Length: 293
Image (cartoon, rainbow, N blue to C red; front, top):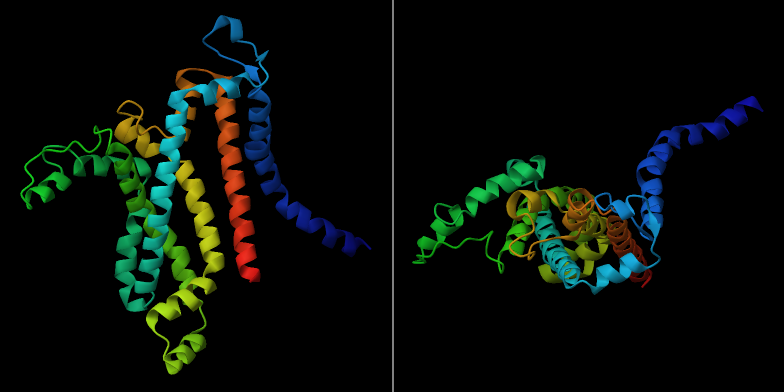
């Protein structure tokens, strides 16, 4: 009986440290943010230094703000531009570099992932500098004489952030696809060659479906990572010009630590968590339905 009890308790003891960590740093802050979103709580306003119940007032104020709606739009544009490009590039690199003789190229593509985002953003500031930046020097080869300010242009600042995110993350997701590609059954592809199947048929009818689980995981991680983007926003644009490159997490940081508005920051946190939760659940359910067909 003692041996049975030890066997039963051991798995719970093994997961206990992780469970405690998740409770302290994930579950508790999420619940605290949800509760705090119903209160007016501002540390820089004497009247609201102590939380005052506000009901849905924070939610009404946020969604009534044109600035916040622009920030939501910026965030979704950033995610919808970055994630598909990154995933397609990661899949392309994995299929191209699955042969071991391309090991050095794998390292070259993966190398930006090793850099902290702050360092990557600093490097790209020099690339995008108006006068001597690499991009403008390259355009001069084709007769373009202007000195485009990529970061300060309201039409280009957000795309500059997408470019840095793409450069930084494509190699990271390539590793997951590379692991998936290398585990694909070789006998299936040999049979397809004997049947005379073309490369497009093989890719769309066999490779993509076999990588469905990998794509589900990579898509989920990539979307969550895109919504969590903040480092290169701070370093490169600070949300400017005129808020055209402000993303949701950066706005959360500003509201909480610059404006000291804990109630509104809690509301933005809840919105961010709900968006990510809805995406993760819907992405999982859609992929499960496709797998059943």
